[in-house]
Length: 233
Image 1 (cartoon, helix red, strand yellow):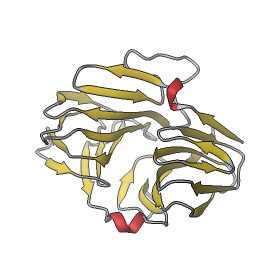
Image 2 (cartoon, rainbow, N blue to C red):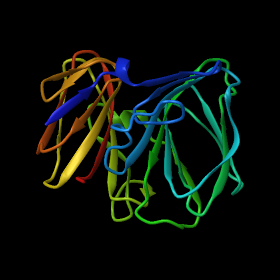
Image 3 (cartoon, helix red, strand yellow):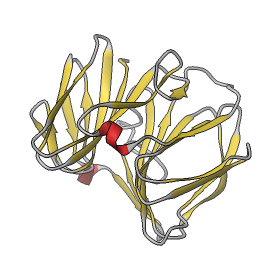
Image 4 (cartoon, one colour):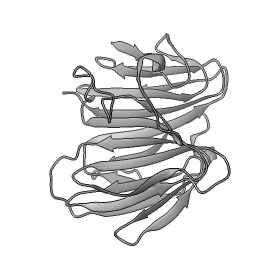
């Protein structure tokens, strides 16, 4: 079953320098019927204006991934890490017992990124940080797994049974993803125009996918996707 979520009906926030689209309940957007999808708790499609950002603030017991769509994103945390990420790169933080961090856009143009929160499989992990420079060409017309559970093979490991993959499809191309029994998926059309199993998707739309053994993407225009594959609940 495919349930398409129109981005025009998602939660929205405008805070001057910050422009957000909320896939699930977050901040001032609250919908009791849209708290999470499986272990996927937060996906915020954020745009930071130049010099905008979140000052130092705390997190705990959450697996947090930042996926840069465009521009630059600079991270600093209480573990002593600091890094500026660009398009297609990933920053990961296991908040665990507690961590402080900040995120800013120090560039001269807006920065767009997906802020992703995943519920961990247990509380109280030691805080951890990581980032990874994925080559853009490694996701061109083929799936690139960027994160996985501890038993998975992705460079970024998270404390949850979830696989996170991305793909950039040229216009007119298709790509299939096999979804084993007992698994469900959440798909986002980050950029472009396409479809999933025949269901049309506009840029920034999403789809909840359950009881499907195969996911087939088709790009009408050059299309950038992210897919969260998790156990069904």
